[in-house]
Amino acid sequence: MKRSYLLALCLGVSLVGVAASAQPSSKAPVAYVYVTNSAGGNTTEISAFAADSKGRLKPVTGSPFMENAGYMVANGKYLMAVSGSNINSYRIAKDGSLSFAVSTNYQQVEQPGCGFPSQLIFDHSGKSLYVTESQVDCANNGVTNWAVDWATGALDYLGLTDTGNWNINAAYFIGNDKYAYTAYNDSCMYYSMNRFTRAANGKLTESSSVMLSPKAPAKFRAYIPYLGAADPTNHIAFAEYPANPPGCTSDPVQLATYTVNSNGSLTTTSTHANMPTTAIRTVYDMKMSPSGKLLAVAGQEGLQVFHFHGAAPITHYTGLLTKDPINEMFWDNSNHLYAITGVYGSNANRLHVYTITPTGYHEAPGSPHEIHGPQYIIVQPLTRQ
Image 1 (cartoon, rainbow, N blue to C red):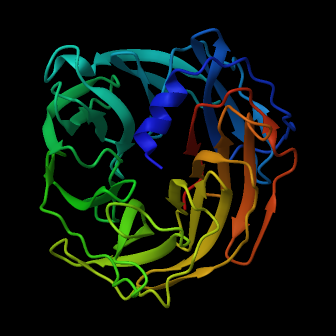
Image 2: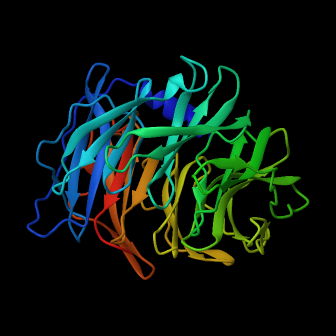
Image 3: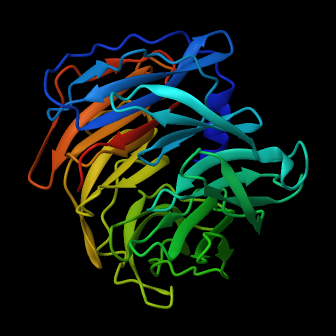
């Protein structure tokens, strides 16, 4: 369940090449899809694909790009990726191809040689970058804050948001870019739900705990939140693990929705009775669709999508779209969801593409694609929501 562990594990895996069952399309792409995988041994590469309006993929010219890349984010102009002790910036060309721009050493800003990133995230503007790091000062976890130089792709250090032993998951921003939220859960023993407030220059300040889980029924003592996904306005969804701390129960994970008030505080109408259960018992990722109408939940048991209604209760939509273990996924702005499996087992080494709207869903032509040893994925939409 501990996402930082899963990401760190992926970094050490030896992968073996990429072979995508891509279907060419003459139509203009609606998104570029980038997957980090192995070039053999301990080296990695970035495989890039153009997705058309039906979710069909074809390789971008020059792909794969031989780059030592880990976790990735994209802001329309640059793709940024962890590479050893650096964060590398790559320019995204009009055809989706990548060219190296500049490298920034993130391990030299607090304590030289310390800091191990688990996730990167941009604000909505793409001009502020946040790096979630464990042992950022050789002792505590934290978020390093960076301003993006739009002309060059370089990163200017804004400072550290020290989170102690907590918040090793990325915090996602609500629509106004002022508040971001995350939840951390280590086997229902150590857990938190926290808010970050964004200053005018982009630096985050961590607030005191905003723990507000729904009341648990008598058969267990608490709901423990994990991860989080924000809609385009002022709502946050969390996966809620039934728990008898210091441990989880065998009950299904449920989904709660919270409303962010003007001062950043949270309220919820979610209860044990109206929170839907998921078929995902070990959650690895949650992502909100750009419209805010769909919530995807992925994990060891596969991938499932729910209807999201803002402050009203989340409701069931699909069953398991796949039983392949899904480690990471992203939406584009054209109703497509892209999801990668892990690197082990009979159902590994795949990139799934789905077309999903609030009224229908299906797997895209050619999906799943064979991607040997997928590690990370990022999607750059080319259409506006």
